[in-house]
Length: 301
Image (cartoon, rainbow, N blue to C red; front, side, top):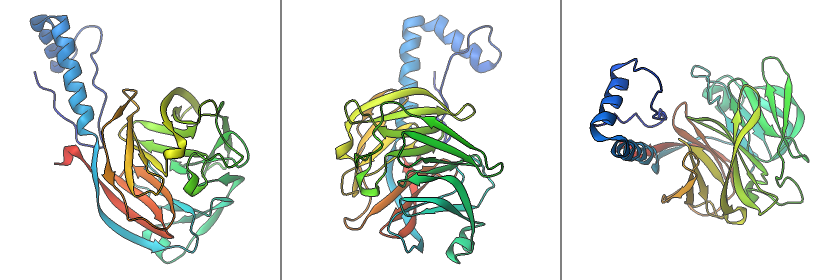
């Protein structure tokens, strides 16, 4: 039996539906289980699932291009990671503030033509994201993250227990970031450092209820991390100089994976590194330049 591999960036969890078969694929699954025996079928299913996960790993970053030059060393630039036809760009300059600039397009961004949005609370760090019409960020000086709806202007907050959030005990020291929000093919994630053992922990968020559905402790020390991002259910962490991805952790399997690749030349401050599942690009704020990288998965070979 073979399972068709999905294109990278659209990976779906493979599962066996309980109850009567409703499609040819379900009938094929049951027939395979009957023919092979349950144990053999489970082994085959797990092997195919593993192959799907391996195909979703990043091999390299290619085709880097500069978008524009910024005045600030620190900052975050974002497109909505969920709304396919939304070409607006939001920019949060510096690592602290409460205003976000909205640009209608890349051209407006390059021409510095923008509107300003007050997000009601001061943000901290460069770990924000825009997802499905809302701006997600860390509320400075607290252990809470916020969801600000650009349309309704409503603000929702979520307190994260047992997280480092002050006294310069940053998750990502280079960008002065305590909490890093991320969105990938599986939804919303929050990366932070545990106050219990100072290791990197990831929480999966429920977008509708704005709550934590699960926690994953990677046991990887925050002091070894320069920056981090999540793509296709895998956490990628750079070294302290942000030159190379040196650690990866499969959040869906709950275990490290053997993946490393080069990121950038040493020097300057890498303030931001975020993956967008919408276009499979890596958004970067590097030494005051905002850049785009194409994410090259193993399945692209």
